[in-house]
Length: 119
Image 1: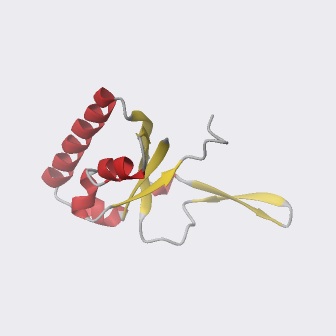
Image 2: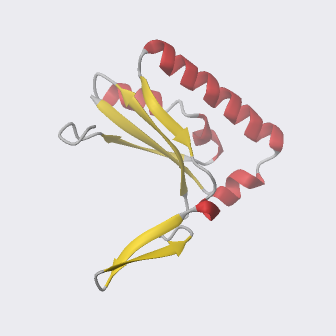
């Protein structure tokens, strides 16, 4: 079963961390991803650019409207994601709890990928 691990953090909090702490988190993150690749769990993922680069599309009165920036009501922003192959939710949660930004205030949402719509 595939699971998406959506990694969120308040960008202001992240940007306010000392450089050495951010570097440590990212080094640990890279090591975890390499471990997941080696173990066969990792299917893909990416770190996203800042929310300042976002464009949001909405439909209003039958027309698509594009707005600069993120417009989700949230204190945290999606910073990246990973798709992992796991036996079950417990195994996916085991990987998710090892994601380094958790230790500096981040969160990880774990959701199963719907196999009926997987490409």
